[in-house]
Length: 183
Image (cartoon, rainbow, N blue to C red; front, side, top):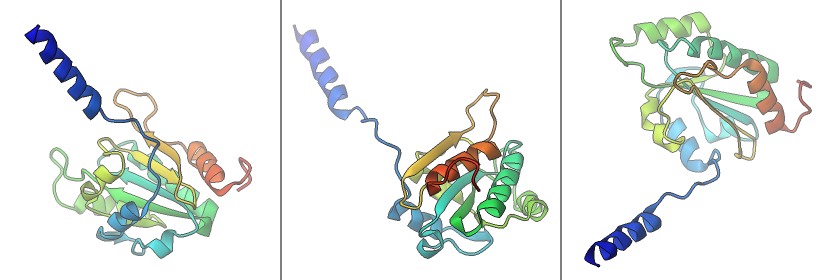
């Protein structure tokens, strides 16, 4: 009998403390403020004004990450295609993973890629605010109203390693209320 009561107690504890699955969080004030607080590597500072009224892409990356290289090219193409309708924020994270220390590799990557968008460092500080980013590349796309449109994560062992330009463009078209391929 005592064992049954103990089991019921722990079952109730699990029931009342189990996490509730929620809708993906949008680009809210807390996320914008956190991005704004990160040190700028390239481009202008991230501000609420710079993101207002635009579709926003937030991409987590590192220079040593092979899938991040083509994804960065796709983000650059999206910025060039969508212009002022989109704001892209590339968040550097996990840069000193493994044997990679310092900023030389990251700085060389940015010099080669020459991104025409916001690039910020020290992304580990905001990872928990973005569904606890644990893998890269990870990309979020938000509509101008802040609602979530796309969340791509490179899954371990997956043959799909990064968001394609077509996926990014389709999500941006959806975020901006444009028919697919109109941009």
